[in-house]
Image 1 (cartoon, rainbow, N blue to C red):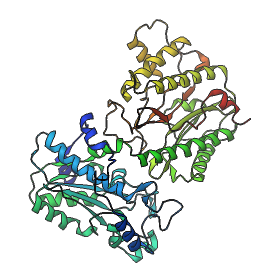
Image 2 (image 1 turned 30 degrees about the vertical axis):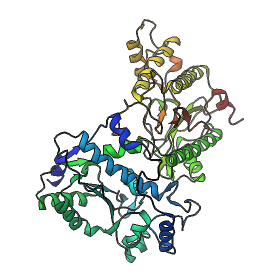
Image 3 (image 1 turned 180 degrees about the horizontal axis):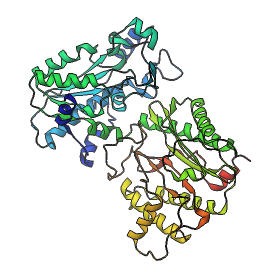
Image 4 (image 1 turned 90 degrees about the horizontal axis):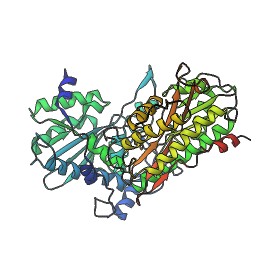
Length: 519
């Protein structure tokens, strides 16, 4: 019942319009744009935290990963503070200007963002922990079972509070060090920190004193106990307010990458590009798809990636016609193409690259034809980004379908009788039924609450990934093309001067270069 109650009360603020997105997404360049920490305060914090033990890597313990002035790899503490400041000011402005059916005069707000929790593959055997991206984006904390609460009042006074797992010597013996409540405020730059047991009474006090709008979305929470507590709190104070979802606004901020985030995206794409080049260079007929999976995982980790960003597609032969093929269990054969869709995570940011290459080092004539179509199409799509037909991801997809239909018509795969753009678009879609692009960042399919019909802005990172998939059972396609799948995918950054930067440009994709990789 409590789940239904909480879900029913949640009001999603999504999708966000472009004008609303701009007001909360532009990364501040002025030191006055958000609260900052002075050099003296940073020095004091460093002194307080020296010789302490933490629940995550920090500069003091992992200088090979994190620089002295960073909270986590690539991101300084002040940037996390600025993010929280922008979110609270942004949602206050959003409610005043846009929200219908809610008291627009409300100036008091409380935002609650939960962390992830540990998940188990079997009794006492956990999966690798990965933090909730929205939570990590706002505070940089990598510990499970933690809650960030932010509040703002009518004087624009902003307060951030972390509710942490307390120190516990027995638990830490088995599960590793916890940062604990005492160190959390200094380490993460929040105003206060408390044990999780204090969440309910502190929230009740805040709601009774300020009567804020409450921003919390149970649908994206990994913490069922927190959901129950939220229901209990609302019943206790007899609140009639709707819960608002902050996720659309957080995703609006995450869509536009700061300079530090852009550098992390460059690094994760460079790692994946070099790793994929090595894998393509080393593959031979007789390798299993599983071996190639192991190769890409190994090569990424050798270059300091945390792990692969997602289960990779390693599809040889006709397996490549299954778009999300992840079984990766077949042996490769001479004459096969291998389609590998893989990326890694570095510093919390992901890459996503696809390459298709001949396992024996040489394309057959039919394979050449399809590969050249896809590669040429991808280059054309990248070149028209920010122009007519490519100014949004949806427009880019429409362009892809039409162009693909035309190319396939030229080589006899699509009927010559089709002579209109709508018909060509439908024909192209039949051979490439997935979108040609998605946003990329902390998650592979990043900021899913942001629609793909927004004009591309500086700071956005996205993919461009046309493909052709022809089932071996299709009788309406010339026999030599059946059972073939080809995709080429690169990661693109819209730079501050409105230009295109191919982040994965180091990954080989020219057909002749692929054929010469292992010679």
